Amino acid sequence: MSDTVDVAIIGAGPYGLSVAAHLRAANADYRHFGIPMHLWQTAMPKGMFLKSQGFASNLSDPAGTHTLEAFCKATGRPYASYGLPVPLDTFVSYGQWFQSGLGLPVEEVLVTEVARRDGGFELNVGGERLLAGKVVVAIGVEHFAYVPGPLSELPAELCTHSSAHADLAAFSGREVVVVGAGQSALESAALLHENGAQVQVLAREQQVAWNGQPLALDRPLPQRLREPESGLGSGWATWFYSNHPELFRHLPQNTRVHRARTALGPAGASWLRGRVEGKFPVLTGQTVTSAEPHDGRVRLSVTAAGGAGRELDCDHVIAATGYRTDLTRLTFLSAAVRSGLRTVAGSPAVGRDYQSSVPGLYFAGTAVAPTMGPVMRFVYGTRHAAPAVARQVAAVPGRNARPAEAVSR
Ligand SMILES: Cc1cc2nc3c(=O)[nH]c(=O)nc-3n(C[C@H](O)[C@H](O)[C@H](O)COP(=O)(O)OP(=O)(O)OC[C@H]3O[C@@H](n4cnc5c(N)ncnc54)[C@H](O)[C@@H]3O)c2cc1C
Image (tube, rainbow, N blue to C red; front, top):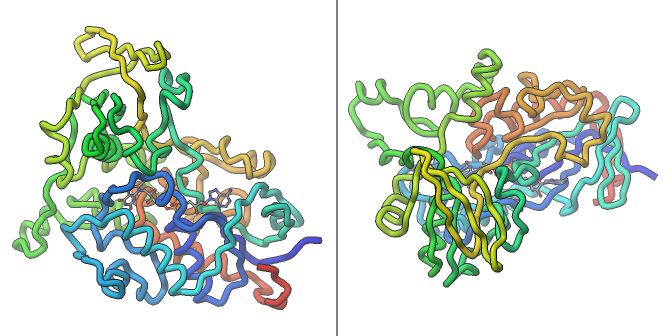
């Protein structure tokens, strides 16, 4: 026997929780699946700080009452909207407080199948069959960890993606090479070093980019006009990405794909710089051309920008090489659903309401960055996506026709 619901939300990170907050406020008939704040609890290292500013790290609720600032005030934690990095554990607790404070029921189970059925969808949720009129997919990046060519062939005991580590202290006393040049690579390396590992960073880029110090909010008007501050950083382009995803989607497709991938990165936060420079080697212009197990360790062949090659041995390689959306990895979507999706650069194309080409199937978060822009890679994008998705999916004809007690939660 199947249960029936108007809307199913898949994913309970910042995007899924924000969509749920809006649906609950609209008294919508929905069920919500996923592990709350799972990525933040399991795929980021202890001791990490968010790169986004305090004011740009809010989940979205319709009344705007459940902000990071309100959470910090309620729990006596330090907070500044700008210039004070947010610790990872604060952000995880904030997500949990947001969920409980707004009374958002989340069923901590994964969805293993979504198939078309009678104009809606049939889901397999931990063995239970559920019929849903509409489905919102907010599954973030955890299915999309990307390890490039030569490294991907190494066994897991010798090479892991950065998302495999919630505590880098496990590498104390070991020689570790971190591959990458973004915040994740640089902060992981700093934490490894501070936890007693011997670390070096290999970056393909010719130099490491560092974000500037936050701009003073009270700087003179002409300066603010020249370089406005926004959720994702400063400058007019960044202001546009931060505030206008609904206009970004009208840019030519090639521009959208390029900007979604390259805007805002890779770069280290200004507050991280002193924990990296002069503390351990950061070698730029380096390409790993091969990687092999060697006497229980790893042997890397590395080519420098000028063409000179050398070998480098270490105990472990951490690939801080990011995430790439790849719909073929979403095996919980049936083949028929996946083949019905129109894609842009491997990501689902969506309309202004975040609906994909499969009617009733919505996507929010990183997966829609090639359509809605780079803000979708960040928590700040919830303020646009969550109300837009909820407005659309809550408007289900016949909503609440099914008695609420028929839902087993
Ligand atoms: C190291 C690192 C640092 C970052 N720092 C920042 C930062 O400072 N600021 C910022 O704005 N962004 C940051 N990000 C980006 C961050 O990932 C996103 O902003 C945010 O997590 C997106 O939220 P989300 O809800 O889309 O996905 P996620 O937070 O990834 O949540 C995904 C949810 O989907 C669920 N799920 C997955 N598959 C299924 C399934 N089959 N069934 C049910 N549920 C499922 C998971 O359980 C989880 O609940 C960082 C990312 C990384 C990797």
